[in-house]
Length: 222
Image 1 (cartoon, rainbow, N blue to C red):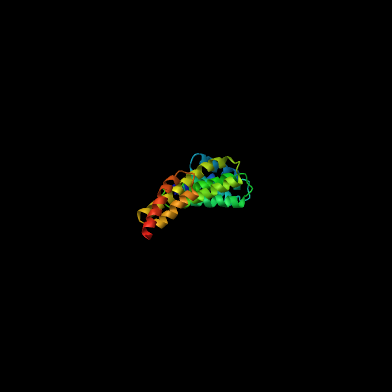
Image 2 (cartoon, rainbow, N blue to C red; image 1 turned 90 degrees about the horizontal axis):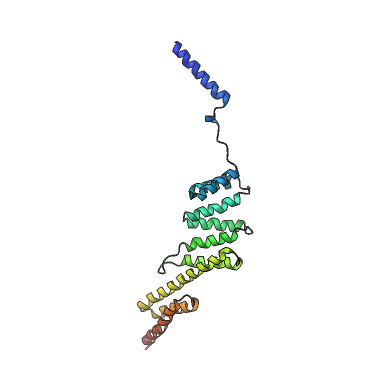
């Protein structure tokens, strides 16, 4: 009987402690400010923890859409996707940033990064060349609108690589047609290499095949 009373008294004391002092176990976590989330996101980003960084930036954007740090969050979400090689998502966020903040000083960087998302997907000359086409288009846009930007200098080097890939692809297709005895289609491809890509070296090979195609076509007619 005594033990039961003691247990009841102890339970009463513990309950009173929780109710009167507002025990820390039951206190909700203090909500982080926009600044806190920005710092957290940047720290995670610098450490290469892009998933956690993205979570912090997304919270910042959702909870504080009108904060001065919201623009930073939008940009860094795009950067996180880029570093995770999630290029389609990165392109979406970069393009949204440019659309929403066309006068922002980060726009040259954003355009460059958009082009880089395509550039990173360049493959061998026998594969689809859409990434090369898109990267070239966006880098040329960057140079056109921001010729003095530090990113334009690097973009020019990337364009050369894109053009060489495109030229190599056209020559590759032309050679395929030639070997398949589709000389008219081959001739068109070789001529396009000479016409569209005269300064990347591949046109020399194309020039050698043009008379060969013409000779084959002449033989077929005869």
